[in-house]
Length: 114
Image (tube, rainbow, N blue to C red; front, side):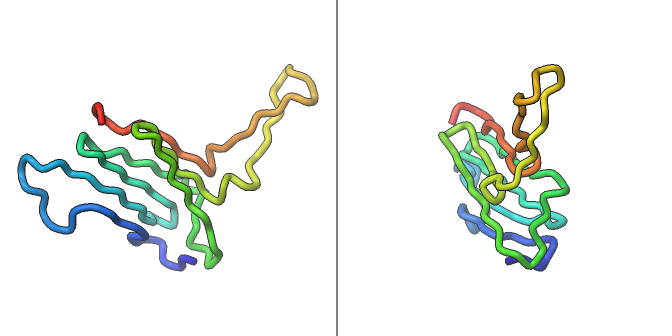
């Protein structure tokens, strides 16, 4: 239940300065202009996933954010992608539809080999 447009929602990682030679390993979820942003670093660089600007969640309603990771591939999913748009595919017949999850799902691969 968020009212503020900007802020840190979750952080797990080092609280002090990382000393040279130590791996920086963290996860953070924050709001930027009301939009969820996930940052993940497994020690080999930071992956940042951001949902599109229309995915604001600072509307005083409850929302669900799922973070799914199989190691390198990470996904950020808003509200289980409930209410996603179905787009009819041109020239494919009346029953051919495509699910557009671009407004509720962001995915990427963490850098490096970790």
